[in-house]
Image 1 (cartoon, rainbow, N blue to C red):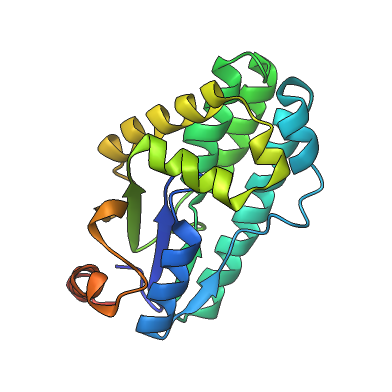
Image 2: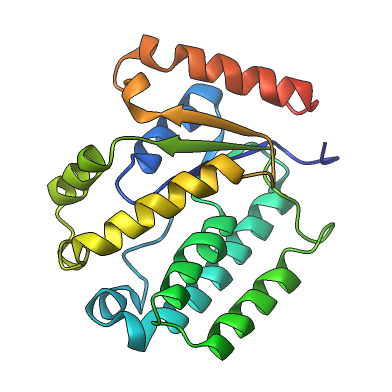
Length: 213
């Protein structure tokens, strides 16, 4: 599909659905490198959860720039990678959610979307070869968020998480930017080897069909 590229598999799904755990597992099993979202050094994330209206635009611009730089870096290595979260989720879910909630102004959102569109123009930017879309039960995902216990996430109201969840459900159903495999997190256990064997087989077949396996 993308000449001279190593396969890029991206893991998509809402906060708490288990993207990082699965990304680590797939990378290890396929012998690919791993690209994780950098949460700890984000200069806006704590402020964002405290005051969406004040910091949504800043956070989204920061994430967009970081995600774009990482995507380009991966493309230029020409080796297999598994990436935690896609650039599409930033614009189509997180930024849009805050715009529609009134936490991002019309001009901020228009600026942000224009930047995203300029950055993701083919062939300068190539979509992932495969996107694994994770979905699951809302209550269980909420439990995972609470178990993880990041203070800034625990401070966010439940209606924020529900809105995010509902948007992800619609987004996954409509996703058409790349070849996708939709996986229910209740259907596998990444800590049991047989739990993901079927998924790994589907991944290998999808990559082989594109000539990138």
